[in-house]
Image (cartoon, rainbow, N blue to C red):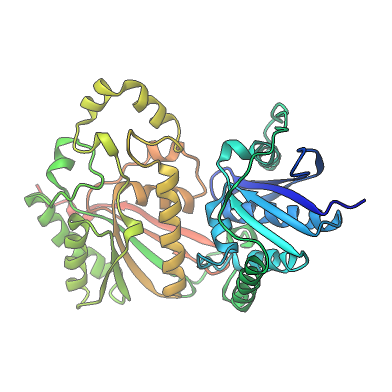
Length: 406
């Protein structure tokens, strides 16, 4: 007898974002926890979000094969849950075909409820996804994780049918209508041949000029620290360099903090008065209790917390924000810029952490990259991004324009 109601737990991820990727999905009895089906697959090189959507799709397909009529879909991906619930726009063109495919599957059921759950309550799907990522990366298989048998009530973020299905249909319609706008990194053709740069969105990533905190070696996150005298001199040189590199830039987009807006204003003036737009997603990492303290003070006062933070991008400073969270919003900002400025050049004025994370993802590098890359104040990096997911990093931390500044 086919189960009437099933629980789907789905997850996906990649080693590098984008990098070797895979997904996992489990279909189980929502009352007893009995596993009806498992799905897991390596999908080559893809982003975290692509893998997460693939996990959801695999779970929905398995539930349909079992003949289920109602589905509780639980994921630890806030992005997928919110997009499938119709509350967040799908700005990344590479995700739209996947969202449309998921919405088509949702329409097969009488009711579908989307819920976000913490990662620790999604361990079975997470283990399957990690095994698939290991296989994609050619790593040895991990020890099997015993799937949890206890099924807890979710934190519901989308209501039952008909509202949920109506939202899913809207997601599907919106995503399907936008399929022609581009692909994703997992399907971008690999090639040694240079691509024409005029078909890409070019981002000039500019770190703001120096502040007193920069010179004193202090953690400088959300505090609105003004540029120093040296920093003001730096941004004049940076503005001239940007104007030479990108005289036809369409816009300057800046973090809302004054050390960035001042840098952005100087660049916009050098470009002939192009518009400046503030973007909250470009703000620096929130360093919490470490804000304004020197590196030595943090090492002395929080040795264990500092070691944990340096060892994992998922760990946040006390009362602060993790680099995983910074990467999510930085990636969201990049996707929005590519959508808003196709085939154009945009100057992005931000901070060391968001820019490092953008470059890490552009180069498909691991987290160790963050500790090995040095970005100077007022340095410039250049990245080209194509609609099909292709990426070319053309310049990293150019500081030649600062040579004359004492």
